[in-house]
Length: 106
Image 1 (tube, rainbow, N blue to C red):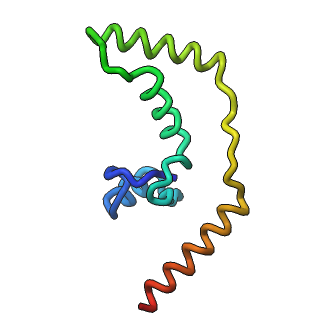
Image 2 (spheres, rainbow, N blue to C red):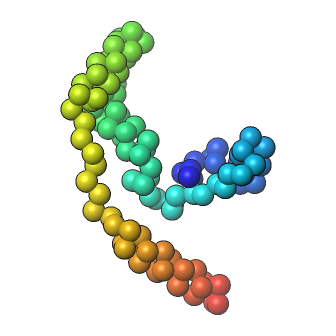
Image 3 (cartoon, helix red, strand yellow):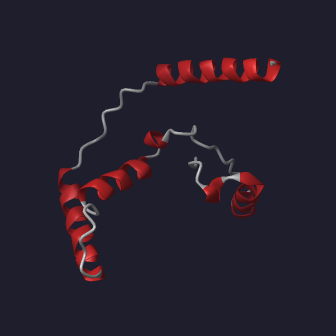
């Protein structure tokens, strides 16, 4: 499962994956759905809690701040409480199918 970043789009991305992992199938998350991607969630937290404001004097400061954050985060992190259920996903996919069918018929 991949997001819609430029490195994951198009036939070249599919071909790269198939070359390394012939049994794998690339599945994209919906556009504007980075909340589905756990890495995106973590990077968002790092951006807000560690990298803003951008007041670093050198790379050692960034390295130390990231390492300190990792230690603290690993000690205090809790599971995300998802409100989007499998039923919600199923409903969304059905609506998306109907919308796609309507666009194809137009």
